[in-house]
Amino acid sequence: MLRHVLVPLDASPGAESILDRLMPILGRPGTDTVLLHIAVPPLAAALDPRAADDARAEAQGYVKAAAKRLSAKGVRCRGVVRPGSPAAAILEAAAEKTNGMIAMATHARRGLARVAFGSVGESVLRESPVPVLLLRVAEEGKAAPLKVRRIVVPIDGSALALEVAPHVAELVQAFGARVTLVHVLPPKPAMGETVAHAERVVEEAKALFSEEGVDCDALVRTGDAAEEIVDAAELKRADLVAITSHGRSGIARAVLGSVAERVLRTCPVPLLVSRSRA
Image (cartoon, rainbow, N blue to C red; front, side, top):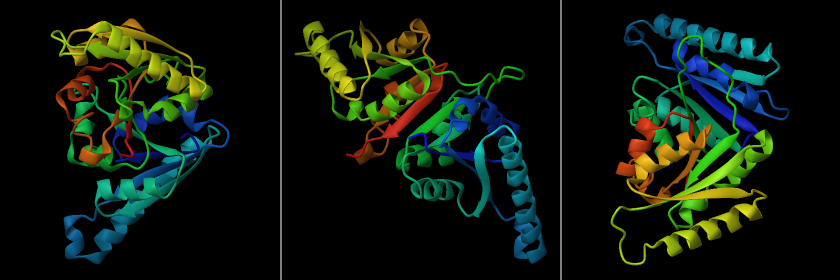
């Protein structure tokens, strides 16, 4: 997952601010970074072709300058400019590499939902062939490098929820992070939703993570699922929450569903979303 990192940039200070936070990932030996800027032709281009050429040259100058700044810090990277729809261009670039991920900026005031449910971010999350890392734009003066010491992984007893395990394992290996599994029972459990069943779900998940070389601790909680997941992340002082989205219905069940949507809106830490192969 960490061999190729695609970072879309839209020339805003917020989008570019995550580069410093990503340094622990981008600066790892063997990691290639692509800074992607989408060139949207100005309206004047329909009347004056020179306007399109000027816009393209400006875009290339911007992304090359950003790549040069990263290269000076020891990051192996290059800047790329592509025309067309932003979402389509991001997905096309991501599909060209295996063992990669997309890292996208979000805006702190509106939380992760601003990018996750915007037209571009929603399409990327729904269709991305690689995991997507969402990071909040840091407040001025607080762009500290990302540290991944504790990862919270919500589980629900389904095999799909555990498909994020290999990606989590790579982060554990890269950062020496610890993993906490979180399973939430509803306030009014349905038939079969017992503490004993939840403990079996946890043990099965631990066994799968163990096959990936990851030892986990776990929390079984009762209450509102979104609130309990966010609370668990705060309780464990997590640096990342990692979830699997359900590919067959896009991300509706895992990300656009009521639980995960609220996690996106309220979770104070970065989120890693991995689309299910199912």
